[in-house]
Image (cartoon, rainbow, N blue to C red):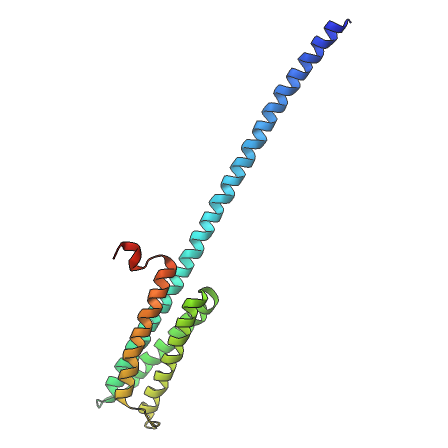
Length: 180
């Protein structure tokens, strides 16, 4: 075999190998691209899931605080009237328990800024609950009165608005986002 024939054969082999390698490299690049796209899609789904869980936590915390405040208000109003307080007491206990559970979940999920506000609100709700229960049991401390409870409840609604505003801002749903 002469040099020209051998070099022709070599060129042909290199051409075939190059063509095969090109197809293989193209396939590998396409596989890596699909894998990266799948990973990005999974990350987006995970972020959406986390955002939905946080939103659900915020909804539960807001709802439970509102129900707790409403139950406190109803209880203090019922103290001024003659009648059976069992159902009012039961509702207050259930609202307190529901709020405790929602707050416990929030302690594990929410950012520090919101947690500080939620913690303050929860402590204040507990203090008002104690005042209401002492009034109901007929063993008030100095400063315990229906009027003091009403003032505290009014202040708690303001604390709830502040906490809700922080939650909405964290979710990106504040009024500023809507041009107001």
